[in-house]
Length: 201
Image 1 (tube, rainbow, N blue to C red):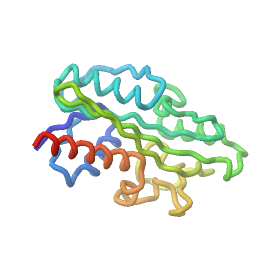
Image 2 (cartoon, rainbow, N blue to C red; image 1 turned 90 degrees about the vertical axis):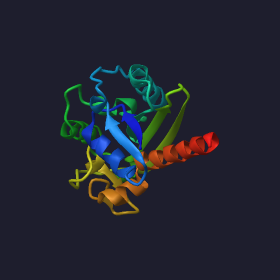
Image 3 (cartoon, rainbow, N blue to C red; image 1 turned 120 degrees about the vertical axis):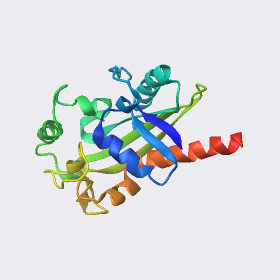
């Protein structure tokens, strides 16, 4: 079984990645499980830059196959904010509830049709030989007027998808993985991994 080191400490994110990759022969481990406690400064201006920064830092320390992602929420009314600052929205020590409250405050009195948003996820993979690739997944929706649902994490309670009539926090994990930005990006990542394996046969 091939070991994958995921450059994250976010337990919710790691759980989702393990769930989505459960049918594949990958031993998914976190940075901490790989013995890495370094703080990685995400100084990039795009999701792609931040994903590669994180993957490269962990790769330099391990020399193994490393997967890193950078994901976030882009709200059209806020000109794409919070974007790459999604996890830091509301301050370094803000909770998910704090971030959601700040977002709702910024969108107070904004009509539903102007609350369009998208979740974006970019995954970077670096192989032991230093070669790499990135993939990008996105999920379109709206920001609800109040949080709904207890599944997921982050902005899930506010991310409403009209075609399903619910937020992503109201979906069961299997439903969410099929349509989520991270689910789409992970499936693209798996396709790229398979291509490389076939090329080396």
